[in-house]
Image (cartoon, rainbow, N blue to C red; front, side, top):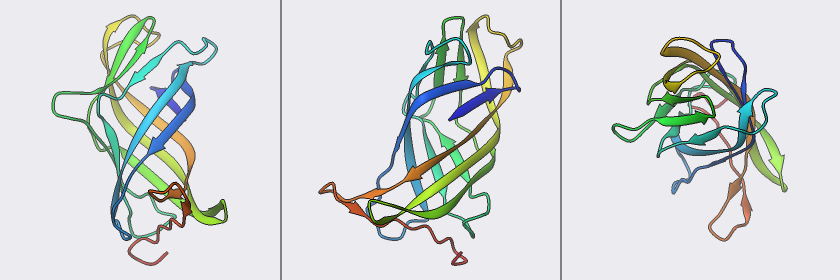
Length: 169
């Protein structure tokens, strides 16, 4: 997953995991909790930490698989996700950015899974301290990437996961 701020040097995390839980067989929205490890700016190594501070993604399944289904970044009151680089600190507050995600049904371990493509822009990021390559205090960021989502039941066995959208696409 790459996070790029104002077209500057991308922030790259080589280990990203996402988890989400649902207790219903038909969900119109899912909370996804990301974990970002081994992060850094391009060419500088893994020298950045990402602390989500309880923030997560709220994904709403829309009308079609190929459309940009809504994604919202939600944080506990008064908190923001924090990216800490040796030279500065960046905060990403709760917000609803532009773009979203699209999904296609794939197969993992013989069960239906989803490949989700994320194209999100207009994310507001605030510099809170230090000196980075970027100047100013408020910038726009983008997130682009793909993830495969597979279903696992409480016993740890693979189960089908399918997203149909409200129009049956």
